[in-house]
Image (cartoon, rainbow, N blue to C red; front, side, top):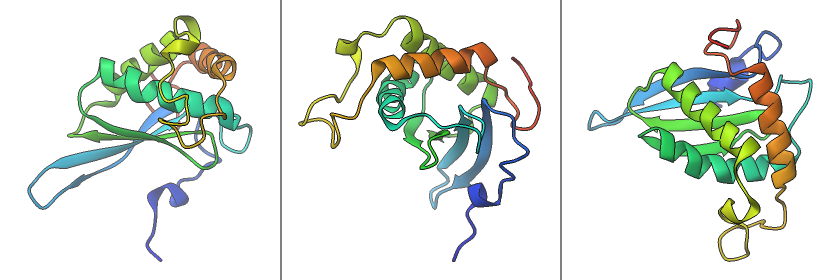
Length: 157
């Protein structure tokens, strides 16, 4: 089996919340994509309930695109402690942290239920599993700690 970087990461050594560049890859035509680890919860100490994580996912998919160019996808980790953030090019971590922090602030303070995309059977494969209340509470908790620009030290918070 191929080695997967995130399975070689020492999850006992990281200090969430943080954004960490996992790596960048160039395609056959020279296009570069970057994969980031957006860790919102300390691994093995907690996890975001699925309904809240699902709502955060739907909202970040839109809100982050409004704040930074080049977002390809934001996908939740199965462990429910954060997300992969896939972007075109090689954006700097600080810009991504700013876009994510501002998006979480919007979730915590501004977003109303009608603003949440993909909450019906037509646009979501599990539309009943959402919670704006949970998304707000987790967004507030992450913002209170601040999102570090380094996975192993609290930087820029």
